[in-house]
Image (cartoon, rainbow, N blue to C red; front, side, top):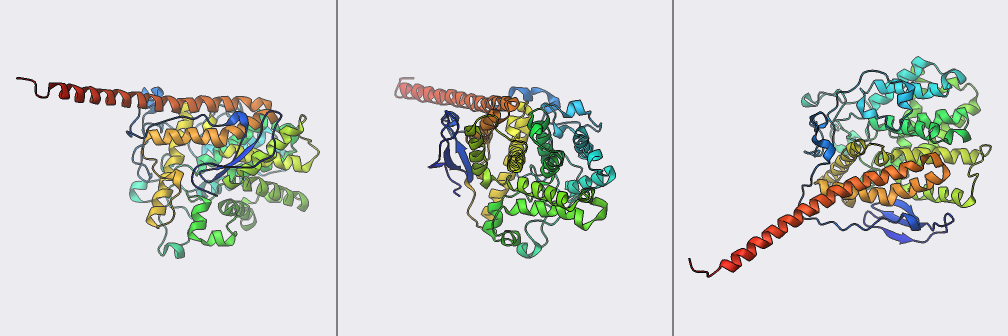
Length: 463
């Protein structure tokens, strides 16, 4: 795959009025349809600073920073929150406005259990609550610390996890430093699990699935990025790490997360929720369903996911047969992949932009590492040193990758159609910031031009 601009390829017809166009955007396989092409937006690179969104004026939502981030300025996009310690009720959890970033990290364990209880899964499979809580606690620890919110004394260098990092000590030639993941952390894991829960409940995807599969989707989302190092698969492959070799350069981090998550059950009886599936066939089915769904969160598989979703659209309603195991497995794949890139569609622009600054901070960190190691630098991760560039990246990511996927999802699950509309609104928010910046730049340029003209007109004039 290329890390450069988009390059078109061939493709079969998609929906009734949609012809898919297969392309590569910044290293991601993407599928576009005729009515989903990105709008051309001309923006100038001149100047780095652009105005903050109008909702940033309240002092309670001002910037909060701690050491450890790759970016020295969050431009006020990170909200300063007094984290909640209360356990929300299921009605609040089952809402598009729910925001995992508002809560203390340990509260999200209870949120996860409540989502399982909504479907009565603990009773159905005799899942032990204490085992699940211990398991979630260990999963939380194995996600590298969020340098914004979690309780880590970064100033004193504390907070290292015991999890195995993707780069071994041998490869680094010294003990690896603490890895502070601004985005791929426990909050992202909880956010993905919650998004899947909403797709199932509010989106109506649960009508096609069996209880065992509901559990596999919610659990799979929680562990899909377990022990993520804050860099991507391509970084592992370019460095020829032990993980890249182990998994043959194929979905390296996803396979690592699957193994880490399932091995917790087999290696520690205190964490083993798999034993609740007493029948070996059921146990293997759950493991397989989780693995197949998590593998689809690899961005390299994005194009294949959208292509398959378009094939269901082309077939016509009813799109899915609940008695078809392959259909149910695809729903699991589709939901996990969609949840993984759901943040740009949050019902609140304030929340969406909070996530945006987090993920682009990780991108900047990877670009810096690549330069230090003299590796080919991932193009779209480099130069994210201003709000202007970050806004452009967010618009491009939505138009090229998120929108075509969610446009198709809105057809397959009509209750989810509004998500694309929220994404359009959030993208317009970034565009408004760019437009304001360009307007100010135009005023500055005109003023400078007027000053030059005035100076030229007065040259040689008598005193």
